[in-house]
Length: 462
Ligand code: HEM
Image (cartoon, rainbow, N blue to C red; front, side, top):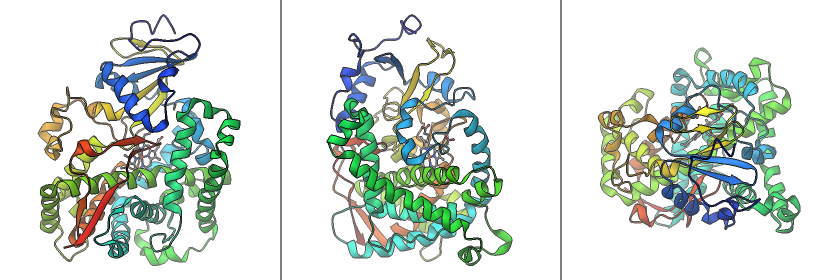
């Protein structure tokens, strides 16, 4: 490995620990440290953590070689830290299990099914509107509201469970937020890998409490499913067009034990709630920051959907400017800002060979702000996503949902859901943001990318 990795640059390696000293920092500073390292080595960098060799790839050609390969779909072992939370659900599943389960789960993400979810997206967006009524004119952290909206939507569209957490006073928003932070603290502070130290700081106790809340939620979903006659189902859908939701697909396949079923439910709640809510926080923030953009989005919504009617699936295809705004927000704020693979065979990426047993990471946040591909990278410009502009770029210069066979299965679902939420919310509220420029937003990494100082958004009635 040492010889094969020789021609790739990287920071000074100290005996035994390698470059791990670079990461002996507070987890909230991790974001800046990673950006510094990536900026210093724009064509890719290697880091030794003791005996472990990690590459950070930033060149689109290198990224494509790894992410498009059907052979390199094994997640890096660092992901194992999330196993107590989501078991070996799809996102962490080892390769053989992943291949089988991905096929089964994907059947619930066909466009025909997604179209049927639009009524649910709409209903949940109206509830969000009514919950926000009490917040008009106040400075709020919109994260909590959007997390509950995402959770309600995900449970109903994927599992036919009407959770209705938006209308309740409950701790689900806090639970997701804090669980992400606690896992990140374990991952980020090297010494927290030792359970007794994690314990001494009191993290373990809080982690256990929150994990129970989370697993109780997953159990509730599974139990509801097991009640054979789901009355809600018949109210929600006419018999002729019941969508096969995610949970139906895995139960009907008969290939999941009850533990595996719970793992998949937990994985789904985790993968789908936080990412969607955090992305929307950033979209709301940029709309609040750039009122002209917000006006244009609203105008498009009024032109396509009108002022009174509910959005329909075909409307969503016509919300092209809105889509570009969401894409540009995800460029600047890719919530899944770092993900990695384990390299299971020597792999030639063009300029060098990545040896078997190494890990590769993709620093999405750096890739999306590289001036070589994104001139004036901090400028918010949705027209970067006009088809003729997209054509000029390598597809791996923009990977908010990853790329290739192990990409995000919720990509189209999320885009449709966000368009519906914006259609309903913007017709009623004007959004404002305490931040005035992209540069004012300081970021931190938990498992997903977050505002360091909260999503400071407010709404006023139109
Ligand atoms: C804007 C919102 C979202 C973003 C930015 C996002 C991003 C991502 C990324 C980058 C990955 C790859 C992670 C990795 O390789 O480690 C991923 C995987 C995944 N996402 Fe999403 N995601 C979003 C929403 C959703 C939603 C709403 C769902 C469910 C409905 C979902 C379900 C999944 C699943 C199941 C995987 C694992 C796929 C596999 O390993 O085969 N995501 N997502």
